[in-house]
Image (cartoon, one colour):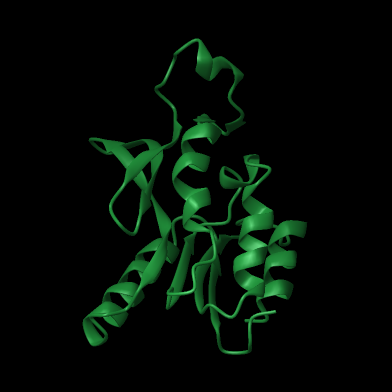
Length: 164
């Protein structure tokens, strides 16, 4: 288990600013410690005008790939899982995110934004998240919670494993 104080877990309903908070904390940490070795990823919205049409994964070293889209209509995407109106590109997500969850000895901080429904379509993602949380690497992560209702089983498991 991560030692107490080694994990900062941001939770809340969609759209309240979890990702924004994580990125601002990361920017502040980098400003005060320019040699900080952070690894991980964050997700951000893809917009066309005022309309949200999808999400992409961005690694902390700047690589970008699709996570989900409401506009894609390839034959391959017909087999992709969906969350609401979004089709989730699990293969693209895994290609970028899973290597970022590998434990590296020189890492000062792991960033995981977010552990949500779309990301959890990857069967390898949740076990990788738990390994990071069980390591001694300080972690900054986000978990969405439903606007109405209780936490999901996996979000409770993350909170238990992280000992935040």
